[in-house]
Image 1 (cartoon, rainbow, N blue to C red):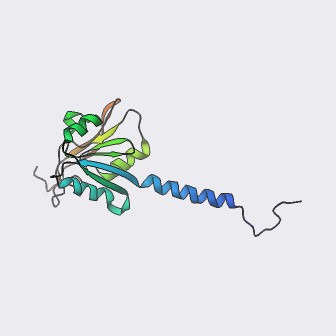
Image 2: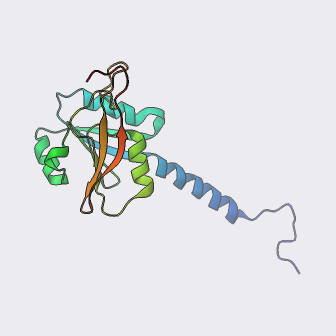
Image 3: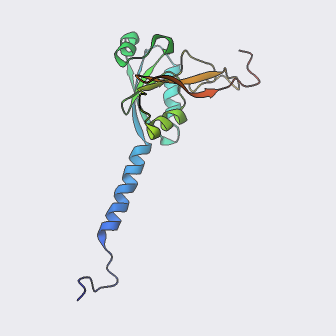
Amino acid sequence: MRLNANPTRRPILPVIGTILLAACTTAAQAAEITMYRDPNCGCCLAWAKHMEQGDRHDVTSVDHPDMSAVKVERGVPNDLRSCHTAIVKGYVIEGHVPAADIERLLAERPAGVTGLAVAGMPMGSPGMEHGDHRQAYQVIAFGPGGRSVWASYPANQGSAL
């Protein structure tokens, strides 16, 4: 004797599993980001807009009177510092790091890496757009495992910088 003799009745467990998987996938894609910034800096808000494009991430901006203290607390090396410091899923994001690099970090979660940084404020990086001009810059992965180049962005032809 079959317990589920009704051929039109579908098991509910696979349906629930599919719904939960879809919810987890969406949650993994949309990350909450807390960005600490000097209240007088406008490029930080432009970077936040870059991060929010396409509803990829939600950025909460926190005006902080002592950004140096935030960077020291989060372990940002002096030579990698920029204008804002963000925290996403436990990682430190310093400066104008492109969204694609952050998404790769969250997907790969490499050992020994506590964050990514774009030192300074290079023209053409997210939040520092200036027409078609872009300076060459690198995204540096840092942490107890040392440092490495995570991504490189070349200057474009129109950039005389």
